[in-house]
Length: 315
Length: 315
Image (tube, rainbow over all chains, first blue to last red; front, side, top):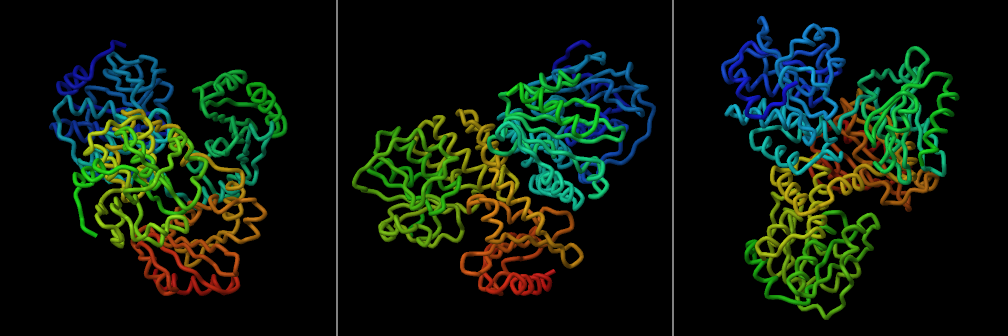
């Protein structure tokens, strides 16, 4: 992948038309924000452009997606946004894996699968990069674009609570409010709304919480039985892995989620002092220093014991 | 109270010395942020200045308070910050109630008890007003001041989730990061840390949750027994009243907290469409449209029935 500047991205996009914008599977607020912000911008420059994703866009993002009419065209230019790896294309988009003209991303781990690309790992959200590209194209930011960019910033920074929230994140969020972003509605919808199923699952997860190593490790289980009893879906489990780590004195928070095939998906969170990616690596997993994951096979008791032993050694 | 401008505030403060800065009782992040930011600023201008409060400053704000050495002096100039009403002075500060020279506030309900004052009800946090006063005094913002101002902004806007978070709140937060505010540490400490007692209390409160009127009202109880069993203190209950309203479909969230004397303290929250202050007014209480409170006497069953009847009628 040849690295390009923001200005070159803008130049290439302005020259192109019939632009297909690929978002990663299981799309989150930043992926959706990038895809739609760029599509709105390119359309206002008179182009055909459509964001696409293997998975359906969750209904809660309707305020972003509703304003963009479906367009069908023979794609002539392929852009990926917030998309680190072709493994995240999913079934529907995988045919494009060797045909990506331009990649706009903020994952340091980007595999460089595109012809041209910009990867700004200092950007808390990829919409921060998209915003700069839109500015460089001299396209005015309207309310739709502002809502999309704002959403990417707040979701990828955990409403400014993660360490990736920089002064730029705050400044751009303010700028988007100036362009009409419905900040109050968006933050409430993203961070202050729970389904009854999620509530039920949270209650069960809290009931399952165990403290080990003098309260330095907290562990919760999400079993298939809990999922069934609560009626929760996979999207309802978002963020639950952050719960054990929130507790005072906890250095490693662990979530064991039972999968269909008797395998446990493990999520580990630390406050950054302990490198949980190294812990997860011992089980063939990985991730970041403060947030990592892996899979462990066995009964709940076996999985718990295996994980606790290795995590305990990291304290 | 004679209304003054930011510039006049700055002028008066620069002329004064031996300045006592009063904060309201049960101090929150904004009150503490205002008191300490102003004290740090005035000291860097060579003055004696001390923030004071009837209640102790909670230990979690040590990163704000630790840098300011205790000063004792005969107060010659009395300033209040974030302080709407002399009823909030508390025992220790009440002797100053008729002696306030200057009031810097953002509560529209300010009772005008001071000689001079500025009340900017458009400011999400009162530290936003303090920041402008410090700028007008031409005093450089250092890390201590930045941490204090940042804390006020994020705590009073609920980490930008409340409707009072304006573009100015975001921009000033960014500016404070530029001056060294430890945004990540502060947001984590304020919004992402729970005591084990709080966790236990939350679990019990969730277990007590009832849905009424087709899920339009959700209600939780916090009984004295729960407080005892969980070991939670009053400060651990902060924010719990927001939990029932978060649930999808809930229009009014109600928290009934049992007080020492068999009285229930009721907190009501709505999404803003239903005026819960009108509901609480029927029990002699009040507040804002989306957040209000009142007290009800009786057994838990009587309190629940009384509150539900009136709240149900407001749907």
